[in-house]
Image 1 (cartoon, rainbow, N blue to C red):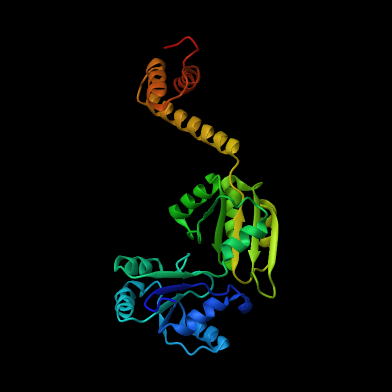
Image 2: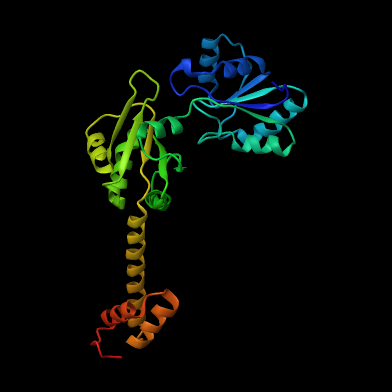
Length: 289
């Protein structure tokens, strides 16, 4: 083990027995362990019989910690970074620290461990050769709407985290986004005593969790969009956009021929369909201009 390196140590997502011997040895050997929540990590170290120096590193102080870690590494001290559960820097603090250490020309070592992302993918039974991890969804507003669109249009399997109290609302929003019949899997309390995995359509799971209390950590796995389904959605969106353009041009007094020309040249609508849209927008007869 290189002494003066930043070690990214994966910790259990529930079951303490999942911690690797290498991870334990690393936490015991380094000079300092940086943790998202030192109280939780102190309990982990106590269970392992490790008396480690603990320093906090979370979203609010990560930037300030970079220079401190770099200084300790240059002094020849090994440092470890852990999160509350799973892998550091994966939907948790750490990425800024890793960049800072790399830019300082110092080594970063991965000590991998359990991951809710990969565990849920395996349990889902959905294709995992290509997947999109999207972390926690935004809670509201335009950011949430864009997030839902990205999820709906992904051709790859999607993996997301969600707080237990917001799972029912997320599933309901996915139904509203047109994904009612999309295959889905909800994994809860992975590796713990009350582990639960439920599979079904988004609509069926939305109905179940609307009536059920949800506790513990939640990971949601959603099947990717069918390419033909996505193509149909794109065509519908293009059709709607073309009609809106035609109606706006008609309100500005443009005639059928001009609208057809603009739709074909600038919007890319086939001429016959552009003619139909233009006629509907202007109210002209089929032989009108």
